[in-house]
Length: 401
Figure 1 (cartoon, helix red, strand yellow):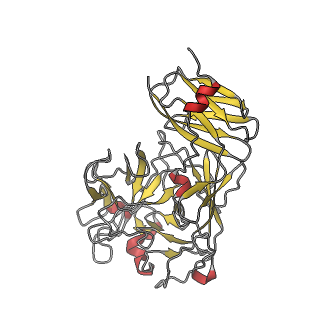
Figure 2 (tube, rainbow, N blue to C red):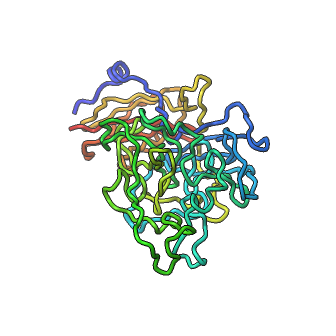
Figure 3 (cartoon, rainbow, N blue to C red):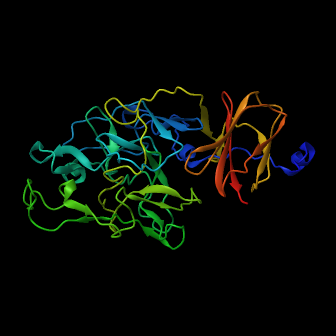
């Protein structure tokens, strides 16, 4: 094969700055030191990222007005969370992970997401778990949130003050991330998973049971109507738009190549519908550090870059590594050239769409042309990541033979 000369490469290749990716840019960052409840800083204070993770530092206090909370003596406090969101989410093909009590994900404003349970069961037997909306809904404020013991403000259901949940003519925005790294959208998406069709409200596939008795539980009555307990619903595949995790693999405005995504579920009157956010189990694998007692305070033990949205609101990742690459699409070989102003000893890694590293080369130096042999790669979308001690850049590349 005849490799392109450096001169030809420099003339043809176009320098492309690292593009912000949604798991970095979807957060509501408090850039003006706004305060909310009890004078606490609101929303997300800082977003930092590496090639593999995003670290979200937040108080757990939103910028919308919260409270009062009927029959709830708890008071929100600054939780000083540092949540860790993987940038390489993957389907869990083994034993599924239950969504636990406490935070199961984080809304885009740094507030915690809780599952559908209130942490108690009928006669404390663990067989009929109480639905938080039914048993604790009286303590929800007008934004459908409330504080837990220890002061963690959270939403079990649709966070109606975070986005416009009545805007049913456009695809809902990303309003959070689950702790398996997959995005959470508001209530509306494309009719078809391939991104076609009109916008529609995403429907849960959990169906309310019928009957008047519960085995080893209370009879269905005015005190314990159907829906009072989690087990009052059964997943029926195809009855709605979403799977048992309350999500689906689909094209979205943020992920035009498709992504597994959770959706908040509500009815036509905007009332929350079980399982509300994430189903009883996660779709993906879950890293340690975000769930369980004393979780949500992850140490950062890897080089990271801080993300800054600029004043105009246009995303800007600071600082990127400047480099050029050619060609794209690729058949067999990819040439890269790092700007002479960059640091020495960079590392180049190519990942496939499910986050597996398929090619790596260390000790990449600036002002030196390199050619990668990618003959063994199959057709598809890949991600080229160039990283150093404190900087990194990502490019999407396509292999087409």
